[in-house]
Image (tube, rainbow, N blue to C red):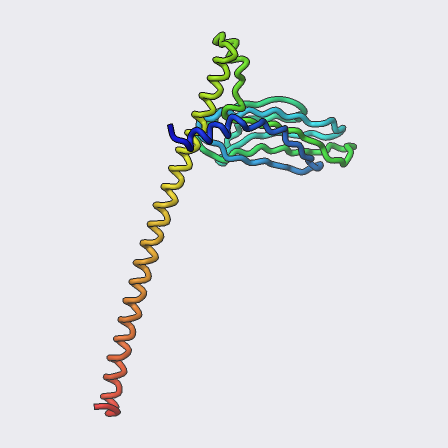
Length: 206
């Protein structure tokens, strides 16, 4: 087994879950969070907004093509989940509107997003398939290792694309440089011949 694979697997196992992200949204303002996610990945999110009299906050989860994956008007607390169909940049936006008579204070938002292995509920899986704790842990490690392998495969594909692009750019620059040199040599030769013919016509040289 590749040592790099083993090291990455150990690192992935040792990673701890990140706490929910907290931020504030000003009245009549919009704040968005973006994240790139791979294809066929489960994404879950849980959000909680504090009480703000006179405030109405709308939530929308979209991709770069404008598809609405989840939306909620007057959101205060809830969950959402979706599976990505392709590698894309996904955006979670909170837009707060203040009604007449509302207080002009910021509204606190707590957002906890998970994807991939973190998003799966292994407790529900254990109940559904009647798995033992050790089997559940093995399933989680299997999913984690698959996620790491997929990430390596994606990075390798991107590296190959970048290498092909660099080689193509290098070839184009080289050909353009050769073409420029040939043009300069041709222009210099033409100037010499033209000046020689001109000086002969003026009988300045023989």
